[in-house]
Length: 303
Ligand SMILES: Nc1nc2c(ncn2[C@@H]2O[C@H](COP(=O)(O)OP(=O)(O)O)[C@@H](O)[C@H]2O)c(=O)[nH]1
Ligand SMILES: [Mg+2]
Image 1 (tube, rainbow, N blue to C red):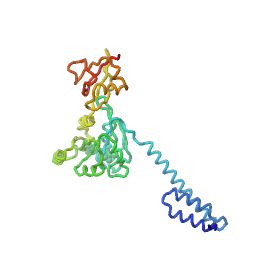
Image 2 (cartoon, rainbow, N blue to C red):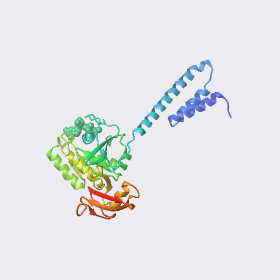
Image 3 (spheres, rainbow, N blue to C red):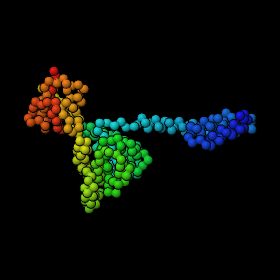
Image 4 (cartoon, helix red, strand yellow):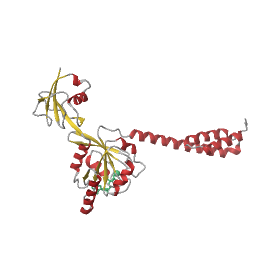
């Protein structure tokens, strides 16, 4: 095995040139420094290596910090989540600002939104997580979020944009609701032809203007309905119904509601009385298998 320091230095230099990651580059540079000649004539070489090592270390540290921050900001999906997706400048951020408590940056400059931003939409006793997304055409658009969400709000101002969006999210199984925004500045003719086209394509859609707020109440309603869930309230004998409903899938029965409150609760109830849309009359006595409807009120006593 050759022990010639000059030969080993050349080997390390070769590793440096062939390195495929910054980490490998850094290791090779450190090795080069340890093998570099120590005499006075090589001072400049050693100083140069040290400077390159320092720069690379700083770059790696900065990248690590960024990755960590990105992870910390990752949005935790709530029970009901809808994403605002679309190309640049269609008014996604404006819609988030109009529908929720969030304060995103809104601007006519394209690609203003670089990162997903969540807000909470309060609608008739329920809270829905609404997320403003970077444009689908940008690198910062996180496809995995589109695959894991419940509802995609496809925000468009012209029909071609819909194909542009679908190309990028076609594999997502989430429900879709098309939101045509800026109806305050779209001509009647263009709007009519868009409506006809969406109908033939079988899309559900809503017409809105984030600017004039036209259609926003209907949009909220349609968002809630898209989840296909029901709200059920509980009531203790002689008291007011609960303010926060239990959210259940359509088709849920009384025992589902009780188990949602506390595991095992359905085995402890003595008597159940039901009021609301699915009851024949207020405080009707029902069994655990009674199918619930939106806005039902359950009253129960324990054994
Ligand atoms: N006329 C009109 N302009 C809108 C409407 N919604 C948003 N804008 C404007 O369109 C531009 C882009 O809005 P922004 O919400 O940042 O779009 P994003 O890129 O999709 O998030 C801004 O100048 C908004 O003021 C709308 O309903 N009508
Ligand atoms: Mg935006």
